[in-house]
Amino acid sequence: MASQHVETQAEWEIRMGEKVLAFVQNELYMEMRFLKRALSVLVWKPKEGLMALATDGTCLYYKPEHVIRVFQSNSAFLDRAYLHSVLHCLFFHLWTRQGRNEKLWQIACDIAVEYTIDRMNKQCVKRALSYLREQVYKEVSESEAAVSAGTVYQWLMVQSQNRLSQLWKEFYTDDHAFWPKEEQENAMQMPQRKVWEKIARQ
Image (cartoon, rainbow, N blue to C red; front, side, top):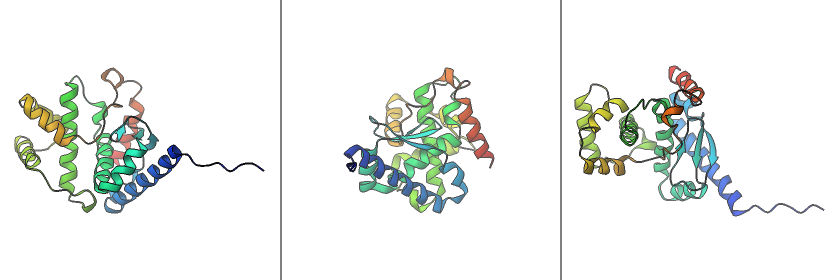
């Protein structure tokens, strides 16, 4: 008689991590049905060493133990983090740096995405705005008619190093380690962008 497989700790964490992500995905879908396709594109892939969600436009990388712990302590943060990564893809942030300073571009993308989420006024991603967020949103929206990563980047270029450090800490939500390097943006990463362009049109 074959012995029954005993689930390991790592296997349990992956199984529970996928359950958590499925719950988060469904919660977002219930309030934002217009994003149904976008919310279902990224393939969940466990990855050790991460302390935040991350994406390359195809997969959503996560550390199972981290996802479980955050869900237990602050499930609303996971809703925002999941949507945050999806919006980076939907706004083509991974593929449109085009010679800009990498650090500034990533901060600009995070601010643009967080601005969008905070303006959605959806219960599952709602959070109280900090003083810094209120000030930043006011400044970037007054300087440009439309807030985008490109316009935020221009605004960031005249900010002090101390304020840039504050902004990075305030708006950091996901890990950008899997974003393509600039030399890849017009090569092997293009298929992912085409997928997201199709979704954006829909």
